[in-house]
Amino acid sequence: MTIRILDPTVSADADLDTTVAKRVAGLDGKVLGLLHNGKINGDRLLELVRERLAARYQLRDVVIIHKASASRVAEDTDLERLARGCDAVVTAIGD
Amino acid sequence: MRVEHEYPGWAEAVEACFERGWTDGLPVVPATEDAVRRFLGAAGRKPDDVALAETTRRRTITAEKVAINAVMAGCRPEYMPLLLAALEAMADPKFTLHGAITSTGGSATLVVVNGPIRQRLGLNAGGNVFGPGWRANATIGRAIRLITLNCLGALPGLLDRSTQGHPGKYSYCIAELEEENPWSPLHVDRGLPRQASAVTVYAAEGPHNVLSHYGETAESVVVAIADTMAALGSFSPGESFVVLAPEHVQILARDGWTKPRIRDALYARARRTRADLKRGGKVAGAVEPGDETAWIHRGLGPEDIHLVVAGGGAGGHSAFIPSWSRDRNSLSVTKEIRLP
Image 1 (cartoon, rainbow over the protein chains, first blue to last red):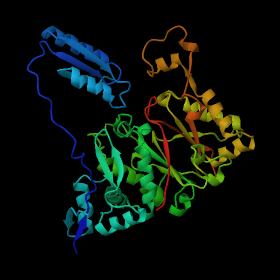
Image 2: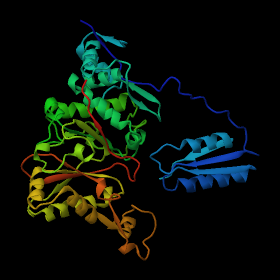
Image 3: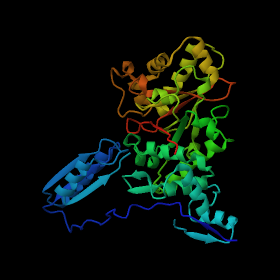
């Protein structure tokens, strides 16, 4: 006798938008976003990234946001600010 | 109801669950359509009823998926209302579900059950309360883990990045021994009526044993528990669960201690200097003048210490269970269990 079994797994909701943002060719004249995830030294790592990128490109501006805690996702207002105000965003975990 | 896979027999279906990555590493009970229908019926739920909507990874868990995983864990149908209440509690934003199930901290979801449902389901609150031997404890805790794996995608090495984890990640479910509790049980402390059945979820480390056999005074019991709570390894401003063994409860009650007094005494004693926290790598920076006399307590106040009674009648072994959360990002949540 055969046995039929049901699938216990769940996939991400179908309406989840996973479209990747358009890539930028370079950062000259662009606004760079830096999202620090809240772990120790993540901010130092991002500062090094900012220094390196600023040496290579003429950045128009840099937006730096610190998450309050690594355990929580970024606030909607912070994500909105990055999405609307930046051409490229770098995020980093320290520790 | 969608049937996914067909196999020649039971043994092949069990093996297929391993191959598909649907288990916790132990064999599961293959979930047939008939079994799942019985589980949904016991909960009075339709297959598409939403049991939990996780907002970070955007996963919607239906009652049918809960039932499938409950069958696989070895549950009985009548456990379903408890599981659904536990998931409702885990969905509370205070619990921070995504962080709790994915963090390097490696927490497990401790499930504490109160009220008359304990007897109805045969939950153990006595000897070996954290150990094996009781189907309800073992399979309810396991079902929560299977749902975490299969429905929330917290697979080890992928989304679950636990550095070490702990054995409670297989199953971590206890009942409170309310009959040996001279004070109020946990669910009453959390605002529910005594006759209600309730479930509390807590993103937790494993239980830390507190052996105190020979003092035989309330003071000695509190000294031992507070010392364990003050240990550097788990020290944080997070919540604490203290699971008091009946022997310790009898000593505390005999000496006239109330829950508020126990909480106050534990909070007062469970503290370290900032210098200690720096020396132990718990706080960044070098020890500075003033750090040796700057005291920091575990938790934000006595109300962060939750007292539960459970365990066997013999032995001075209580347990301290620290919060996974190193600060205030995940808090325990209590929900009433509603029967259909």
